[in-house]
Image (cartoon, rainbow, N blue to C red; front, side):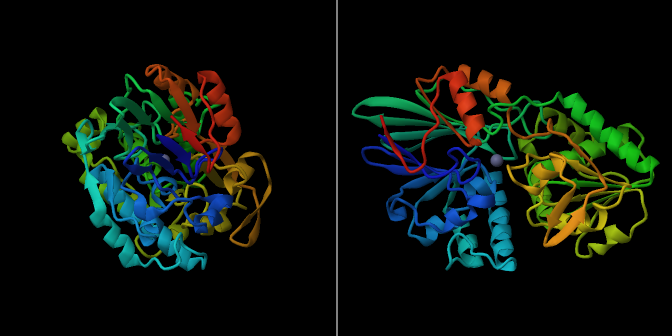
Length: 440
Ligand SMILES: [Zn+2]
């Protein structure tokens, strides 16, 4: 078989792997390039989309699903295999990306794609449960396992039979951190011939969870005491729900009062509704809370901003504002930064991975002046970070997860170059090159 990589090699976006066997061609993920690589989305696929038999979609993050509309517009007519939550989340994520591109007057992944094309794409999904095996044809069988990264995220086990010999491939997708609230811990897989493993945190260890929880409590209390503003930029998927879950626990168990909490992210609101629909996918603790009658995403003082963002701005301090996006690209966070970044009473709490060169990374690195949506801002707000809330496994977890399988061949993907190389060296894997064919 031939294996080629068309994204997420020595970078964290654009996941797309092509597997060509004797009689089948399939993709694992078809993700969007983001950040400074965005314009690579406009390049033609280096393969014929009409010849692709099916796509395995690990999860609904844009860097894994974002080029699905493009592959359809270019002639793909096969099935997309995923879990049900992944299908529902993919629809809102793609529509949001489409609308952002339109609003910002930048090209979408395919120039002819319309909103109805994205809706139509949903008819091509075949949804499976975790643990369920599916023979796709005489030579290929798949099984989804829980990756514990975001709701519905999957590891794919794929058995390929060629010339009477079966090889097992495992695709980690994005592997979750553990223990994380709401989602289950990532499942361990016992065996693999060829492993494709992500390496977002391939060279780093997360802080202990307790440290992150303490920072969150301290920042909430500090905000109340100094009658300030706490800004928490979030990704709409998982991080929003996780922060709401933690604040719900904090407000109900630590008797926090006298502070309003606003969520200003239409996408996060839609995603939270999908989370509520699939609570059977939640972990034991979250299910127990729900069964005891608690709405895990709601608490005293919590308010959703539906149309009027000025409501959060005009409300009295102290207040907490949760807004997208987690990496300061688009979303509502820009206007809050413009309003509050120069205010010494404000705290900005960064709780998400920040890509190299991003506004967030530069603020963490101590830059005191930053350009937001064309406006130069002086930073007087307090900047703090929590990295232990990451929804990615860290180096230690990746190592433990990989070693369990004793794979014969390991491709280390989906990481910045230094992270991928570091992890590949630790496990005897290789960091593949983009647009290059590997033969087995
Ligand atoms: Zn992801």
